[in-house]
Length: 553
Ligand SMILES: Cc1ncc(C[n+]2csc(CCOP(=O)(O)OP(=O)(O)O)c2C)c(N)n1
Image (tube, rainbow, N blue to C red):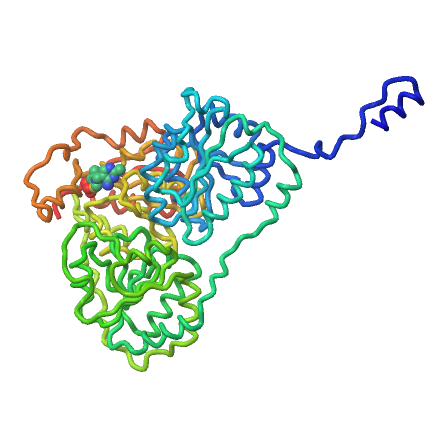
């Protein structure tokens, strides 16, 4: 005021506008959020937009990329594949309760995979959330439960940046996983303090990851005291850091290695002399396969992800178990054995310091991979297809598998030897595979992807074909055409089922469907065509679909 009065007295005219007050050094929630997302490396937005989300997308900076999925399940799985392949969190923007609901199946897969995802959905204007307005959901934060680590709607527009900061750090901290933030549409134009946001951008929140020396020593003693050790590896060891360390530990201890049941990743080289295969997903199956071992070391897997209830002993007679996992829930809910919660790579690295090379090699029987020649004409067996895939598709090609009834054959012939080589729906929810392959390809377009999906599975994520076509991603979609939900028939005997409806899938033409989405394709009818199609995966420059008639076992 003094300033204004002074101006009046001196000039006799109204004073010029005063210099901007401190509060003018503010920006909008939208600009701030865009800046923060950039700071966190989240410039790829996986989304499907609606009116609630438009104010966030308005003026999305030029260095951002919006990856449009035509259904929210596909959006979520693309982000999941991308995050799993990069090892970094991904950002998802969905539309209100309806869009979030559509994404729930794949959110369950992401949760089970420990995938760091910041999932957001647009909420109605704050004034209308409680009024039953279209696209407003007062309970929006409850929709994604229980598949997220944290679910939140900021109390004020000014809290949006801090809430997203919390979401980003929580999603990334171990155990990694999806989190959810509801974002009311009228928050984006509100003002927020620059300084506040600058502080958020500078924050680094990291897990120390160090292994407690006493626990490591104890564990090393147990490992060296074992008469017959077996190692079971899980998805959390499928990282650049942990993968080679686990191989080295197994070699040093000369211990056979199993992959934990229903593996969503391939955490150990499948042609290594110590690799024994995948444990079956039943209580009796696990203990039966581990018979003869007195100590089981589980690294980076829940103990265990069972499927069919086949009761039996948890472990072989007299055997003990120790699990090293990142997730306190996984550690606590385990019915048997001990657990250490921590960074698996850090624990294994520390173990290597104290574990000497095994004095003598035990006679670990090398697993025999059956030699299955490819037939000359369709229909092929799944084993023929996967044996040929192993021969034709080099290990640098990333694989995605969602061909349920053929999982055993797939793993029997699999030949991957490096981290982040295979992705599978961790919670068993179909509709992950096809779009996840799109996300994996986006993560590194120089690394082609081959996705094996069932003809049933294809339909759950089919619109991902459009995104693959639009972005020209080098993904080969191999559709195993058996004309039904064969995987469900496999449950008939163990579950005592005689007959059930809804298992036939006649009259589906994957090639025509793919063409409609802009993806060229063909049905292979001869062995030579199949071999050529598989070999082409490594040099693909865009998406294509290969339908493979299969039958018999
Ligand atoms: C979202 C979802 N819906 C239903 C199922 C149940 N389900 C498990 S396996 C299966 C059959 C899949 O058929 P297809 O992809 O053709 O592969 P196949 O079993 O014939 O090898 C179904 C429907 C599921 N796992 N996830």
